[in-house]
Length: 319
Image (cartoon, helix red, strand yellow):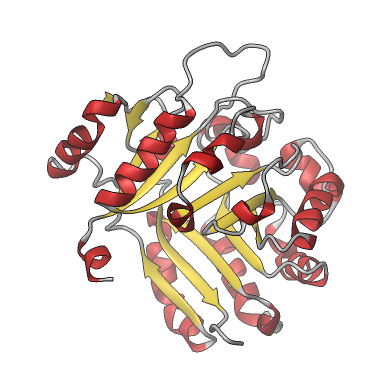
């Protein structure tokens, strides 16, 4: 415990593939279709080295994603080669439309297994992702029946935020109790839709008030709303109200950011993948390279899109 407390905190985004079967309006990654991609991919063993080296040297929390995570055909091998005690610091995100060909026992070891939804209706899901909600919910419910604690990842925007209470209630009724929320960001594909979907300050306040007036928290195990640094002043204003109903407010601005792309490019900002490359992954040099980057403060990153503050409701253990 003391060893972990003394390690430098590091948020790591690891992209295992650039491929995706969807073309979401808010995709900051600008994922590629299967028809146009060719190029180098990190091997499974290289990804194992990244996870183990960073976990052993730092208090590293991993977001492992794509593209679409499960479009990588050999991804199941990652669960076989990375020892199980590393998985509790890893979050995996999928769009829920591709077969999850991983043994549920492995998924239960994760910090979080997230499936992206954009609302509680086919209309809301289709508007952003071009697909209905129904097949995604089928995936969620199948995993739920296999005791995989699914976290629903929801992007809030102009067209769905007002339905937040009924959205949560519907998902609770289906047996889901964990929610991770972000606001729409005008980055990547999202830039073209910034006027249509970006939330203004008044709408953020309305979201806060919807959460403050929600009355069914006893059915929620976890609810997180992560916001960028431009929202820090308004979160500060509402802080005492959230604390009063059981939320914590976490300052994320002091956590370093490291991004590793599918082709081994080492960068900083997960919202800027491929545009801030500072190095390449080489197994023999990786530990030394990262140490040098950390010493130089290259990962001490602040931008307008990375999560800088988070409000968190978490059911006390044992409830």
